Length: 537
Image (cartoon, rainbow, N blue to C red; front, side, top):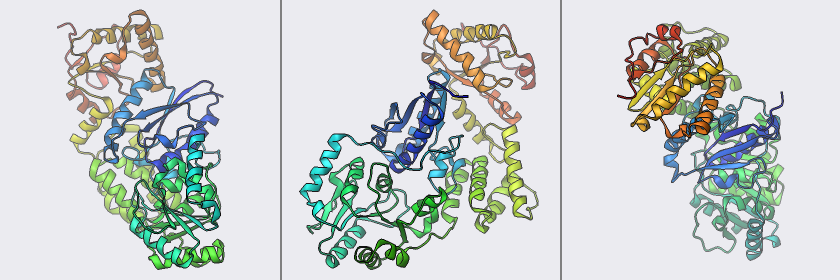
């Protein structure tokens, strides 16, 4: 079935490189949902990566002062995105960013982990998309003319600062390499590209910080070799706007495949012949590699200097342990992440040891260790299946205070928390009347800004409930001139486990009695004893 005119939200706030990866998803969404209106929520720091993008109809800019504020910005955005979805502003939302709340999709690499948040196959070309403005192109032309770049046949664009620990390169390292290669190839020009000036006195070394990240894509058209550290400028050089350049990627051995461009290309079935990767390489060794590429050929340099990435999971497991288990104890995300990684790489001994020591004792205490690889996968998948049946956010391995925290965050609990149990089996007209009366009553309450109205949806799909609620909100706005967004927080509960219901009930201040209630649901979750809330008291 073809969907026309859907309003879709894509959430990827950062980083620059990750946002450029996600431009492929924007293109895919436009193909899968013809005539849709695609809004992209992106941080103010990274907005430039998608400006003028032909597949993005609207930019929702999320203010971000610095990378240290990303987690807080993401959670605020996530809550607002869900609220806008409920109000009917979006028909679909795809939140793709891995950090801080989508680690279940992470397999130790970036692009596939981002793409897992989108449920449909990727069929469009795997190439980052960028569009420059004419004034940006003109600025780069002026820069090139100032430095006479077109007169040289050996111009290197050198990305000299990584942001995520995937490379050992520093500005000083890049400067030493530039000085060394110019001493051997005097006609060579090296553009040091970063977001800050790099002091130097050699006329053959050019400060590339004068140009923006976007403009660097145009700069590639004046260059002959790219040296990168798998950060934002690398992804700019891989856009459809940039000139394809042979590239040398300088990576940290300890991060394994995390930042490997060759590994990523091979995963997507693309040629990596124009990518040469080296790990923790001394300055002199890199200079020799560059010299070979220019005086002989890039293919010969690749034959002599390329170092295939050794698959190692210490870095990945550090992420799983540090960001999932130690911080949040969200075992579902850890197990799901491990299974995705195993699907890609198989049961590597490091993965199996981690499951034996860190996961099985917590999620299946007392369980005998599986024997075969197939048994390990089966055990984890069965646990995932049971989790999906019984729990919305937490599992038995999560302490009670974590369950309270998860429920509070996901349902948006406030100082006053009320609940209603609509009978979703009735006609839409009757359900709408009950919902409207409850919402109107809460909006008349003086402390409505400190209130959350929880709606039980245990016997209806969230999508169907959202449609009814959107209709009710629209009618209240049109007929009663009531803006639901100015009232209490409204949250759909969905299916909870017994322990989660027990925990939630302790957080409730009262139950609003509807004319038509789901008495079975009230009895099942033992909600009869919740105090009846008098809104006009």
